[in-house]
Length: 340
Image 1 (cartoon, rainbow, N blue to C red):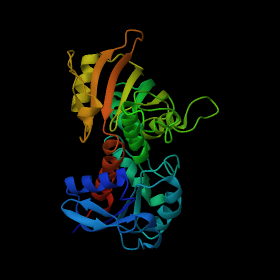
Image 2: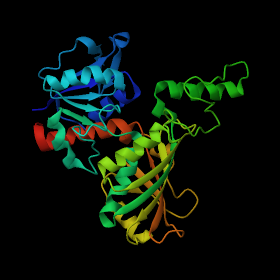
Image 3: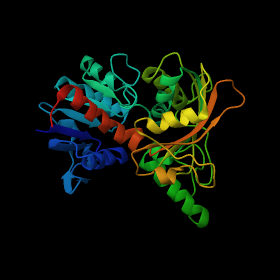
């Protein structure tokens, strides 16, 4: 016996990836529905070898459905997630709407799987920000060995994190640079993204940080440990898929780089590719389409008594969004709903 599953926002990048991963991982499903806004009504989407037609989110009755994976923005989630939850369907939400709600668990299954048990308060589980998800997978096993005092992270985030419009803008601008008759204007991003980097993701806050940077701080504290100090600089780069992060970690106790490497090799969800030679590290091109979070460039920080530097790369549409949501569904099924 399998689950009755709903994918909301099935025509978007993340929604389509959710369907791909559900099929790839052979998630036990008896029935599945794919929902979208009325402007995308009837659009065909792939689910394994099947083709599904989207139905209208606005008129859908969630009664009797087990779980709904939400891949729509916060505005739509605010309207439809409570409706689904009130009808007994557990919502696994990819938007930022519920991440900081104390009554909604924020879950990365390799890090805090036990947190799914808090779903019952609102019948909702939140998926973290894409840049946070991959970072905490790398931080948690090290934190278990020696408590982390402080993290300094700089991100190199792909345009797919801004959706299809971001990917289209990079593509169009790249073509326009080689064909001067084409338009190279910036619409989705604040400046040209092709052959450029932009140190600005989401809105600016009063302290000079951006909301994307604040998310990494708040979510790391909620998922791992509220005592960890985090400072982030988030940068959009001209890469289609895959977020990269340069992470500096200060521990309470000394942690040798070789031990750190061994710990990370044994940790769930991680793959260490760390050779001190040309190409002995992972870049977004290699990470795209993969489930793993990759760690490279592990080394001692000679400026700190207890510091480690590392490089972390992951497919943001997968671990940063769709894969993590499906893993939450798997964890919820194993621990609570117990079908399949």
